[in-house]
Amino acid sequence: METFAERVIAFNSSLELDLALPDGIRVMNPFEENAEALEVSSAFYRKYYSDNRKRHLILGINPGRFGAGVTGIPFTDTKRLEEKCGLHIRGISTHEPSSVFVYEVIDAYGGPERFYGDFYINSISPLGFVKTNEKGREVNFNYYDSRELQEALYDYMLQSVKTHISLGIDTDVCFCLGSGKNFQFLQQLNASHKLFDKVIALDHPRFVMQYRSKQKPEYVRTFVKTLRENIAI
Image 1 (cartoon, rainbow, N blue to C red):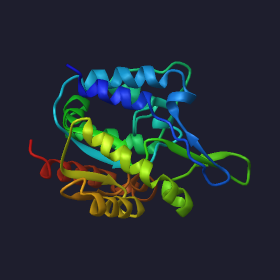
Image 2: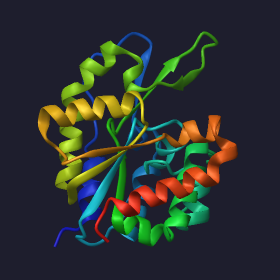
Image 3: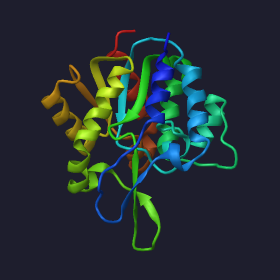
């Protein structure tokens, strides 16, 4: 029988985006740019998702350059991948603050096995974007940072969320990482297409790490409490 893991791996293997994007913005597809991303992410999903349990969906914005943009696993940089999940990508070491926070939440929840047994994390756009800045360097770019980009991606993102649901997601509640523009977009998407009974916003891990680092333990407790109280365990 095909497992949750194999459905996720098939989804990752088929990711592509054939759209005209605004000038200066390009798609970041870790499964094409990093030869090991599909291999190591497949090992990750087979480790934690080789079953057919129903899980609840947690949706971020889009992959960042140092987390999913390298590992192919949302909110998992190479350091957390090795330290917390026992998996390794050769020759690359990345540190993403959002990943640090998420794995503190995972630890507080009961560890990776328990957390990933209840939740599946991805993003409203499963592919990331980068923009070249005035110094000629590529920096992360969010789908909602450009109205033109967001409108161009609408159908793609809607289909991606529907595909996530088809993997084996319980639709009574979805958790949104980002209580601002990401939550607003997902709320509008949900109102139009009735994807989930309700959507609950959580502050984005990057926001916590950048602007509320002194209150991080409180945020971790709030995340865990919110997750536990809104799913049937």
